[in-house]
Length: 434
Image 1 (cartoon, helix red, strand yellow):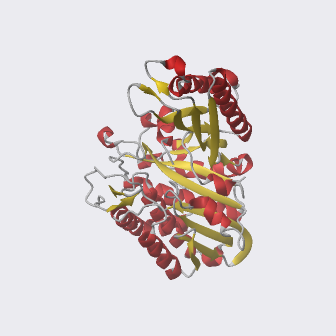
Image 2 (cartoon, helix red, strand yellow; image 1 turned 180 degrees about the vertical axis):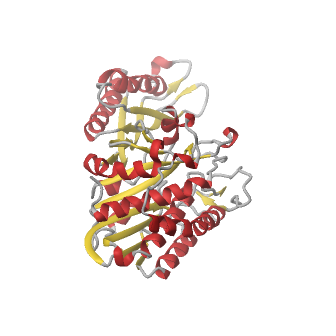
Image 3 (spheres, helix red, strand yellow; image 1 turned 90 degrees about the horizontal axis):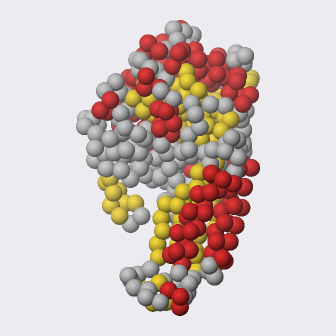
């Protein structure tokens, strides 16, 4: 998940109290609340342990072992090594009913931690051939600990549960290493929903918004994320004699400007936002040589499939037409990434009262976030709902975005996450949501 916090902050969540008082008084029945209170010391300990021992995508061996052991101790059916290191636990209730899935992602990032917490990561690992620091700079350590806590709470209620709960601990949400596959897409391809298919799936992500806030949105809440490459082919010549060749650097510059007219001039801006960004450009080796070719790469962000298709077509047409007008050529490739994180409108309508009981006045409809999440792959298979949980410190100096080396999580947000996921599972299974 990338930088969704900026969108949350934009709606003024920081103006709220940021305290536990934002909770509704009775988010769950008293007996459930007691179970949550009992498990919270473990949740905090798990979070700190996982934070201190972060692991990169497809390498979450220690974390997966910790999770699997916990789920087995709870008496669940446990499957391991799905999509390399993924763990799935199946909790079958004592009564017949629907199936609900809850998901947490486990991977950390190649970031050197700069926080001063006593359990800060000092882990070093290898990423793309280089030695790097490793840090849970996106909060996945909290996600795992929260879901482990929910698993314990609900397993204690096994006899009362009318249905089945699937606990999905997923690797590689941040993307598999180059040359590898991973994440939600691979879990599904390897049969995640083949034997037990959920009727709905829920997921959360922590963000630096005040403790007590929960951000939600019906429909597209996070963007699709596609990658493109453009190879502009010209004709090499001396830099002092540009008319002797075709300058791909000038053509590339014109293409970059032309691409910006797609979201600003070619698409209906009143329907849905979209983004075309060129993130890297490489060409030439010497100051006085016009090269044969220039290579560019970038990202495309959209919030609905029709806009996504239009942008793909228009990027290709724009690049090739501009290149042809200068006597050059452009080879365009577009690589599909994460789909739109799309909250099923009917499921969202049904479950919003549940989140309202948990967050009270802290429940906020958030604007769309241009970051992407591979939770979206599950939502293409079954109805899903994804939401944000605030974990910002009351100290503004400690508030930093996800993926920052200074990312700090206030652990007062942990019980809100546990309560929200527990309540969603119970209400969905029991059909209490209106």
